[in-house]
Amino acid sequence: MALIHIIEKFQPRNDEALLAKAEAAAPALHHSTHHPKTAWLGLPGRGGRLLPAGTLTPLEKGDTLVLDLGDHYVGTCRLTLTTRGSHPDAPAWLRLRFAEILDELYEAPEDYHGWVSSSWIQDERVHVDLLPGELALPRRYAFRYLAVEVLDTSPKYKLVVDELTVDATTSADDDALPQVRVTDPELDRVYRVGLRTLRSCMQREFEDGPKRDRRLWIGDLRLQALSNAASYRNMDLVRRCLYLFGGTRFPDGRVSACLFTQPEPAADDTWLFDYGLFYPVILEEYLRERPDPEALADLGPIALEQLHYALGLVGADGVVNETATANTFVDWQETMDKTACAQSILIYALGYGEALANRLRRALEAGELAAQRAALAKTARARFWDPARERVVSGGQENLASLVWMILAGVLTPQEADRALAQADELSKNGPMMTPYMHHYYITALLIAGRREQALGHIRYYWSSMIRAGADTFWEAWIPEHPDASPYGGRVINSYCHAWSCTPVYLLHTHFPELLASI
Image (cartoon, rainbow, N blue to C red):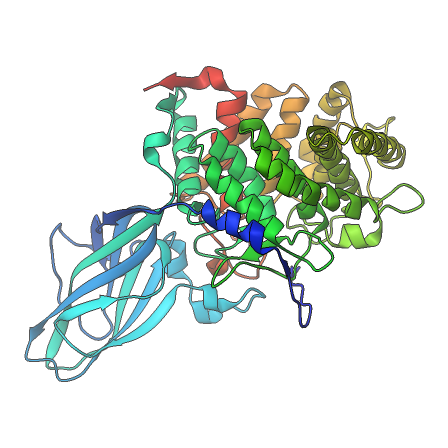
């Protein structure tokens, strides 16, 4: 299910004053230097031999050296190379493969034929003409492992990798973190990995993934902002991202689903119904954390525009139309009918829009949004809720995502939500949730329904299963029962440090404070 929109000659509408304010909030990057903790000759787990600490092994054609940093980092790297034997009489031809998890080294990039560009695969072939010397790579990488394969040298010499030096970057300030631990050891591990995930994605913007796509996406931003407010509290970074989305938009004023920031800020020609609706949600949540009259005045009207545009996609029957549903993400599920989800996300966002309108002292508009929210909720209940069976039915389907969003929108009472969620396992069989993004909203629905122990158990089950599968940072897509699942046609392209998966940080801080203890 390719999420690709192409608008020829697309020209975003830029507001230079807003973009200037976004740039003024750009963070400084913190740098740290890292070196490998261990090394193998050959692939670990595939016949590779662990090398004793400090060993410098001469490499010849066909050899592979795997260097392990011991944790996930985002940054640039430099290899210091020397030789053994005679004077080098030919370049060293190397293949460098950077991997967030070991499984990436086990897959052949040339076998990937999915719909996301293979150019994102961190696979380089380089010639080194002058030896000994340093190889400074110009790209930024997200990785824990580096495999150095010698494609060729010369019979006259062997190559030695003296050192790998990584200059890691993040805009997260570890000194700002609350000094707490989770009293449950398993959940504390989940919490730490969530922090590491958020930290790696905090660069000059909140990136969705530092390996891929390195972009600012609204859906990811919403969950990053929540987790950031519970941890690093870099509210300037949230402000920057909000101003970026407000400063470069579709010509008709719509907020793009994602945007580029290099070489200049530019809205992508991708619009998603649900992502556009999250813009007022993020702005209102930001203002609850930090009063910012300037941001309210600058961005509040833009946020309300997104709601009015979305309301224009409601049909005469009071249900969102096909344009809305066809451009709604929710989760990577190809066959899922998203009508109930789209309708519910609009209802959900209207509540935040009402709050923004009241902040702007637009009482009449706030009242209108409240009335439209109530009308849409009434229609949603009549159209999608089967009270006899206590099921949500959307387009003839019963799926868990539709139930979750009907709960989050307040269409169902907490008591109805509680009873309906008792059937969650059965609903999952109709299409399992693929992303931590959707699992976050499922847990939120469980909490609304009063199912706190089940919510906590799901955090333990879902995120811990990634750690057991080898995660140092949490992943973009993961179905524990189907570990090879990928929405893109191959796991090698998956992002293994992804912003929308960091929310155990928020969930544990906000909903389970009794589990936190000072360090």
